[in-house]
Length: 239
Image 1 (cartoon, one colour):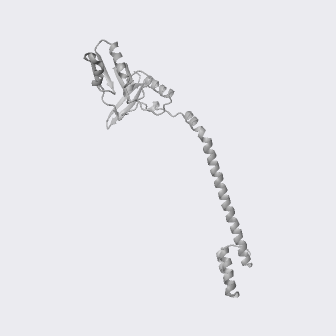
Image 2 (spheres, rainbow, N blue to C red):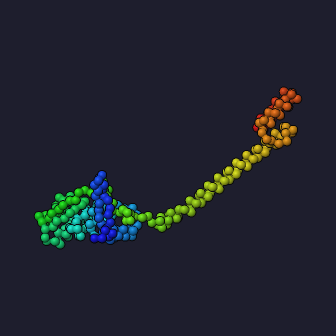
Image 3 (tube, rainbow, N blue to C red):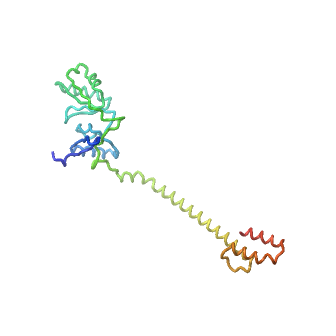
């Protein structure tokens, strides 16, 4: 086949040895279409599901895969698998060779009953560990893409309330800062007025600490202790 018609998915890489799954691109299109139609944006497709020619082969650890040959097979849940298996036996009179995943060969032979003599069952090596496959066929161009339109529809109803909350918090913060600024300005104005009242020779305030120190040095020799203490109390209140 043309190599461009095939999809290569690395399943397991061990130093220089790699296990690669090779699947026809049309088969992958069937899988991707089914995932898209069902709104599945995150999925892991185990390699053995690709051998069954159907469009809904997302990995499910609770399913039995029965492979008749490379082009035929069926899958079913554990409850429906015995019925599907009996139907397969009734349909084919010749000796039947099956390859199964998800069930022990002995259990499948027990379902066959008297027909077990014409049945050969082979179990594939385990491809899952705790329900997680070793490899994922949905790689490269077949990796599910997030539908941003659906994401926008999901979050659109929440955006307006969130924006209103943010605007309210911003307004509240702005009002608080404005109120604090006004209080600071008023306190500074009052302190400057009281300082200039105490020391009328000072025309304006440049450095409050140095100006108070200089004013006290000039003022102290001219005043008695009682008046000085009263003035110092007023200065302390102002500062």
